Length: 474
Ligand SMILES: [Fe+2]
Image (cartoon, rainbow, N blue to C red; front, side, top):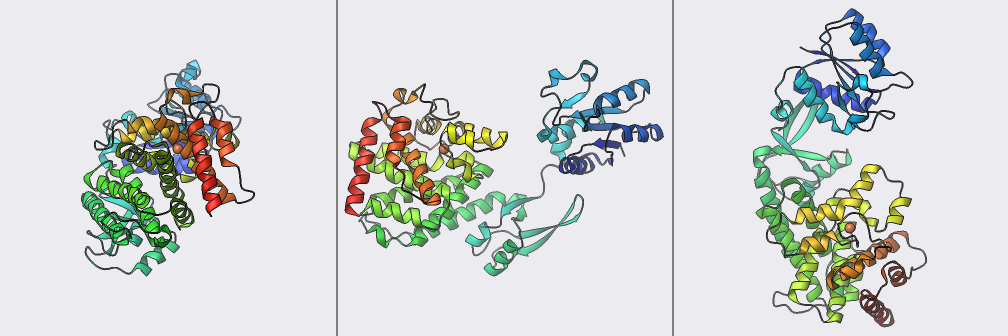
């Protein structure tokens, strides 16, 4: 069994690396606070195989001190250096005397640390992969609130030791289970149940079929295409759309585009389109979605489609192709922020600068349009050029960041792209007002100040007209 000293003041990181070293390399881990303590141990145990150390602990030049010790006391002990608050940002910036050591500037790359330590200790390069495929996969507990039965046995995971888990069967395949039991676990803070990995695909198919049927059952729209008063649409219909929407985003992220995730996505997009085509009054439909018990990303998608469709109709451009294009764009535009819906509330560089978000979150927001476009390219049945529409939905031509007035890229975009940018932002402002309340904001004026030019003026004028007509009717 290899012996490894670890010096890492970040307790969580130290535990994470230690746990994985034990799991994957079956090593004995000896934590030490600094180079001084580690050197004291090396004097007693010169056979230590490896030191994993942060670059610097407080004012102590930890990695340099350990290097000096190893140089003066030649042994088989190897060293890996981790980045920290005052460490070089890049490998090439390491001081000359430390340049021969393996250096991981970002400690988020802890898997690299484990893999490299494995190599140093003589394990094969796939040390992580050998054990990284568990026999069980996690399923968010909320899924089981939406279902009544499952197609496979479902387990609770109990921690039995630092890296030992036991799986206990909690729901038998095909059984009707008690939802109270699920609520109770959820109240206790349980996030996931587990199912056998070989059942994952079947489970997704089962969930998809179940949710598609449930949405179909809750739809109030006549199958002959006849219209109904939007006031009569039950709230439960929007809540079901919300559930299906978020399960679809999550499943696409986990499994990609499979027949099940495509079936589920198609039924949501179809229902959003039907709700618009078969509702007698758009302003009522908009209000019903806005006031439904549903989450931000679903509301944003459906509301954007409602507003965009109204303007398309007013422009006389409501061809089936344009409607389909916008429907897909509304569904997929923020898929990269599926786990972080609060980040989708930011739609300008100024808001981003004021947000005090971490650099990781900053990166997520800045790249989400490009990431969304990359994801949709894997969907073979999506409309052509949908990736471009998602790429530019914040007004940046390469999908990074937001519209820059100095560049005024809107001039280069086509009508649908500009329409989508404006409607997307209109709904961001609308939802912001709903959330924050206060004095009604002149949203159209905000959009005019932000995006006004000769190519957007017609769309903005139509938006204004539609809003005025609505408020005079209401
Ligand atoms: Fe977005």
